[in-house]
Length: 350
Ligand code: NAD
Ligand code: GLY
Image 1 (cartoon, protein in one colour):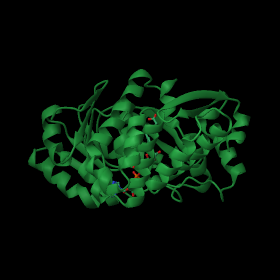
Image 2 (cartoon, protein in one colour):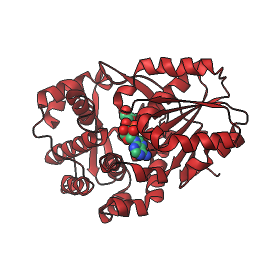
Image 3 (cartoon, helix red, strand yellow):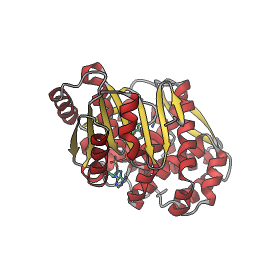
Image 4 (cartoon, helix red, strand yellow):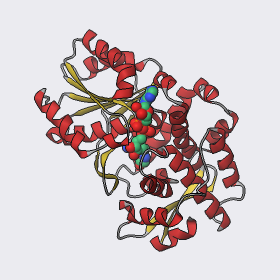
C-alpha cells in the first residue's frame, strides 16, 4: 500500500477495503509484531471477526479487547486494563496496539500505546467519519476525568492510520452527521472550495459518492496544520473552531445528550453569528454556515440551553486556565483568525 499522506512518519492510507489489508500491512511494515486490538462492542460486532480472520491469515499473534461503546469508555481505568493486557501478552515496543473504532477507542488506545513501555507502536483503524477526518490524524490521545474532557493525554501519532471509507456505510445517520460537522469545519477554516462542494452535495448518499476525496481533503488540511504546529501552540488552535462553546455544551449537558459534532455545530454557528454581529465576520457567513449545517442534519440553535452554565463550563475548560482565551473567528468562509480575548468577555459571544 502507498500512503496517501505522510505526516512526520505517521503514514495515512485512505481508500476502500483497507480493513481487509490490515494483516498484510502489519506483516509487511512491522514484521513479527504481535497485535493487541482494542475495539468497542458495536464496532467489534461489525468488524472484529473479519479483522481477526485477516490477522490470523497473515500469521500474526493477536488478542482483542472489546470495551463498551460510548464516551464513558475514555476512562483512566481502561488505560490500566489495556496496559495489563499488553503486559500479559509480553508486548515489546516493536509490537502494536491497534484501535478499531471511532474517536473514543482511538483516543483511548492511542494513549495506552503512548504510555505502555513509554511508547509502543500504534495503528489506528478509524471507523467513524469524525475519527477518519480528525481524531486519528495528528496524535492527540487521551481520556476524560470527572472534572472534564481530555484532561489526561499525550501527543502520540499513530505509525499507520488505515482509513477504510467502506466502514462508514454502517454508521448511523446521526453519527455520520456528527462527522460532517468536522468536515464542514475544514471548509470554514481553510477551504472555501470544499465548503462550496459540500453545499452542492445535499445528502449522505451524494457525500458517500465522493467520500474518498472529501476525507483526503480534510486529512490533508489537518496534516498541513499539524506539520506547522504539532503541539498546539499556535496555528493548530484553528481546529478548535466552534469547540470552546461545543465542549462547554458537552460538559454542561453531560456526554451523550448531544454528539460531539452536534455540540461543535452549535458552537460554530453561535460564534459566527456573534462575530458577524460584531463586524469581525463577512456578512452572510453565518447564514451560509447554518444552511449547510442544517442540510447535513446538524443543529445550530443554543436556545433552551442554560447560557450561564455553558459559560461557567467554558471557563473551567483546561485551555482557559490562567491565560487569555483564544477564540477562533471565521473572517469569511475558508479563512479564520485566532483572536485573544479576556476570558470574562466570552459571555458576549454566547
Ligand atoms: P465514538 O468513538 O463514540 O463513535 C460513535 C458511535 O459510533 C459509537 O457508538 C461507536 O460504537 C459507533 N461506531 C463507530 N464506528 C462505527 C461504524 N463504522 N459503524 C457503526 N457504528 C460505528 O465517537 P466519535 O464521534 O468517533 O469520536 C468522539 C471522540 O473523539 C470524543 O471523545 C472526542 O473527544 C474525540 N476527538 C478526538 C480528537 C483528537 O484529535 N484526538 C478530535 C476530535 C474528537
Ligand atoms: N481535533 C483538534 C486537534 O487535533 O487539534
